[in-house]
Length: 263
Length: 266
Image (cartoon, rainbow over the protein chains, first blue to last red):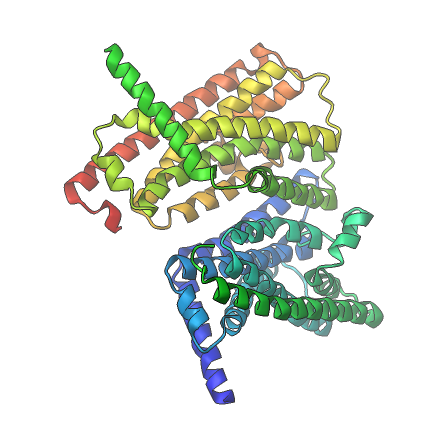
């Protein structure tokens, strides 16, 4: 059984990666769009009279932006593409549940986003001479893992809505900028007004990202990091629980109504 | 002669109505408003906080710039989609096979997006003025409206060009969205053109929108016609060049597709 499951995961991931690699749209999501945001950050910094941009937020933050945009749009278009090509019914009707397929696809999309982050990180090292001196490596590493987990939880949560109704694609697409803005992808969360900081607390990505950025800036305060990690895990698990509940509802809804293609 | 003109006008208005209906008639008012103002609003907030973090002291520059980009993104993206969707839904062959004159068809597709972008930008400006307490006491409203309308018209030239590209390339929409992203840097939306490297400044002045946005900013500061006339004239000229280039590109693709019969196969 576990062998069969591993075979499914491997096969799905390979197909997903092939689709992403052969699609020029991925280049836009993972490379060009983050580059544009990094350029805006740097030029704003230049216009503000700074000699050098802040590398963690303005450059590495652009990579985070690429990860998130990649996740939102690739997960959205996966299901929209299945529906458009008449594949969604076959997936729902197959013995492997749609939830499992979506979980694997979302995992691949999240891991693909690492390309964007790596590119931004390499750029900051190679071009801007970002120094790794003082970086809290273990803190940044754990935070990155939790960031990936938080993004995966958000990805599978949002995927449900798109399977349920094609109109939800619009709603999910609109989340790209609000989440980036609330989680402070390219600026520290303290820049936001207090009420927006409270609002952003409901998004697990925010906590993992804040811990990662602070670790990159050299923060070794274990209490601070552990608190952020615990909150990120806790909220991610809540999202996962809601996702499980929604999956059953969505699955029942599309089987009972038989309107998978028409909604 | 008059009969031909009336026929062209009828085709033009029919295309404009179809273009509107095809794009937005199926959406709810919420979906419509969210698609028009939601993304630009959150993008603007994102840039404002980016600016705040790096010490950029003029957030209103970002607010106004992003509001002025609304009609541009509408004209560019909307017109591109209107043309691309003909192929996507398999109706391109019927359009190209019909005896209707091409110019009213082509320009009719843009009419709704120009009008829609213009109205949305005014709405966005009113909302931004309320939220960010913009001082509108000095604004030359007539010239501001002229500038916003001009930006909406000239950006449709880019839409025609990218729409034509999307007829021959399946990645046309990706190329268009990448270009729209580049506008955040190039046309003076978030920071003055002078902050760009010299090469990019030259690119910026070769694009529509740059002069239109500059003129709109001056009108917002209360400038009169004399102060912006050169910018407006430059914007009209550059926009006309792009509209003509887009139209010629479309006709060229149409001609080649008639000869090879491959338009829907790409």
